[in-house]
Image (cartoon, rainbow, N blue to C red; front, side, top):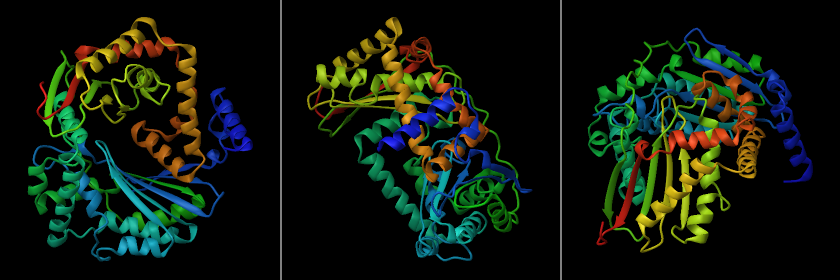
Length: 444
């Protein structure tokens, strides 16, 4: 990064952290949000630095909206939405997008399905028209349905059945949760993938792919006047649907440690630990994010230095904090060397966690974790794609995109004591599930 850009990012971060409001971010005062009569929430952030636009369409449909018999159906629609409508045959979406200089992608999580488009300003109307068309007119042709069912099943074999880490992760979620649908694999159980019916698909599409269940983001070289006019033109006529039934299940508090072991044809052992933690908007989440960064982010993290460099008990360390609509899991994983000792590695991790709980973390560690978070935040905010992603994340998971502009100050305000308290509250043995992959033929 050149000095001018680095100085600018540091200055912006300082302004925001010192208490300035959203208008200190260039162009943020131009953000405008509206709700159409059919319930579609639309947020537009004009940014004319480059003649491109990022469109994010957030559908509130993920693994948490499924039940036994239809698991994986939200992810299936991520595929089907590219497979033709009653007005555009299969392949047209990508062909038209590419002909207009654009590209696209999508992903499904436990909580949402998100469709992303990046394109030149000149293609704005074309892309908005395409997105509106597939929200209203998806063609569930039986032949296409069966073809895509096979594609999804192949993806499951690749990502789960033929992946030791993937198989362990699936079983970890199924073990850590006893009631909440976060226990289901987003890609679906094999028997469910095989048995979705056309009626299941049509009901899910009608219920969840409705304007009142979506949030649309436009960021880039677009004016609010043009953007809202085009969204109203193409999305406005789509009728609202009866809102999806609210999820009422609350995962009961875990009362004791759970364990599982998989004996698989593996070369190296794998250790995973998960703890029940919070939802995206919970007050403890910034401290938990920083705690996990101190423990496991980068080569200078505590666990990397201890497990990989000093004790050579692991060859890789990773972590993930799920921040969704409901309380999620905080994950810690370690890949061991061939012949590695799982019990010893687990003991070393326990010692590292106990040290944080008993003795806390240093100010230098806290500041380093904050710097990493702020650097990632400002790198994302320098692009239209990152802005669209962050705005959508805060609007969907925090109920108000404007909370995004308080996030740097919230992270900067976290203290070492709050991080220690988060470790004591979350990383308890009675609150965790421990799983391992043992290479087949080795003793358990």
